[in-house]
Image (cartoon, rainbow, N blue to C red):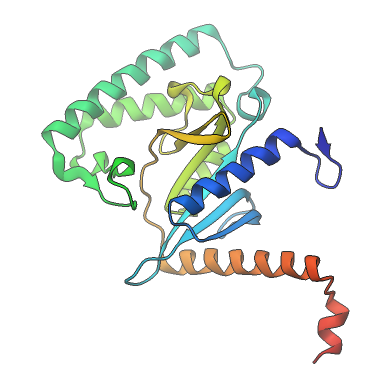
Length: 235
């Protein structure tokens, strides 16, 4: 079933709703859907902001993918690439396991709940780990249309990035580098891959929050049937 106004399927709309619910449960009290992002031409399926007691809060972007054509290039899903990707992914998991043990100081307390905390593996400049990430990223770019995923992180549009997927689409090795994975299980989302914390400048986070507020005001106006002419007449 498709939303005629935006060409959105019911399945995609459900994933967005679950992403908003999950975000609010993690303390992201300000959320917006289909929001244009700072620094780039992209829109986020869901954008969320979590206030902090001291200073500016943190930001998160959720991209919902309901089907493989949304995520994977049709002509690049070769068996050899998939097999190599799985091998490199296992290597990455093993390295991260050992790095967490030998370098506990790499843990970043960037969430309300310790089980969601990520680790700054780049801080120690481990050459083997950096080499694995480079190859993993290259393989994913051959298998996926990762341009958007890469650019959102490069532009520091937010602090955390999540892919929201149905269970049947989840492949740990195919989640873009730096992104977390929220997988639909029954009527809830489960965090199966933690995202990597990205530093985002204060001015970008403030702009992010302002755009959430603008999106919320636009939706409120729609519900209250307030038009631009009404606002002009009230001046």
